[in-house]
Length: 391
Image (cartoon, rainbow, N blue to C red):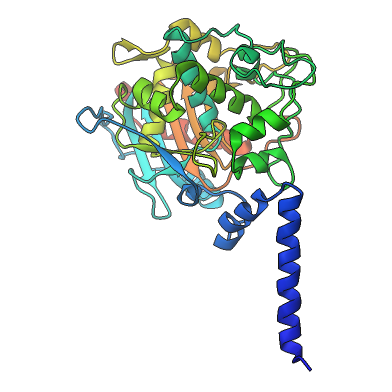
């Protein structure tokens, strides 16, 4: 007779085999990757340095052409407020930078991170992919009014022939994408851990509603945009990013763009892994309407369009940038799911970069998270401590 302990072990093995077989047969094998990356490493969702567990492609900088951020005369002389420090602790901030007049005023790192640490952008990558779109338009590869199906002829759905690049760039495609981050059986999770992201997009994404009518935040729209840019330019997104932005803007360090498990397609909707100073370059570029130190990288009109609402019903979103009117000021920002922010307030020549592991919830009916307002309020309180002539 088999010992009881061996029976239990055998039963568990059979259950695991049945589970794994079921996931493969049902088309949910990506869940095994999710378990391997997330739960085995003590997390319950994606985390800011999970790039170590995925294939990546390097976004090359030019070590001979690094543009260094000027340090403000009061660099790190103004101390963070108590409320800000409390928020950092609560939200597990790893980097918080304030730039004033294009100079680095305050720079602090936490939890073992430093100025060269790579950290996952999450959905800030949407704004950066939209910058690639603007460059592709400027370079003559495509037009905002082009139909998506011109570049992705396999796109499915009742309105597949109508949806334009402008629609996917402004989150108004009308696609069937379900933006659910925590349900392992939904497409957002599948895309994050997918073996073949391009195949997933062509097989499961459909344009079921009339495009250009209403805003709906969908990571799938940005992924379609990424596939279009790669098809139109004949380059990988990482290669085009390096050529168009990372090197011209003198990035401090290379970045890593996470790929699908096949190692082929960039996750355009997320997952550019860079340091805080290099993420900040996109804020400076857009605050200066596409001009980088005298070089017009993006057309001014394109940047202005990006930072303006496309739909009257969604004044809080432009073309892959979040928008806010707060304290009477026009604010635009890049945003990631765990509280990644590059916030620009051009009229005050102010920029805030925050990277971390958590973010606050938005108030009911609101589109901006509570911590977003805290970072802005406390940055202004810190500015109040500056000598009058340097504010």
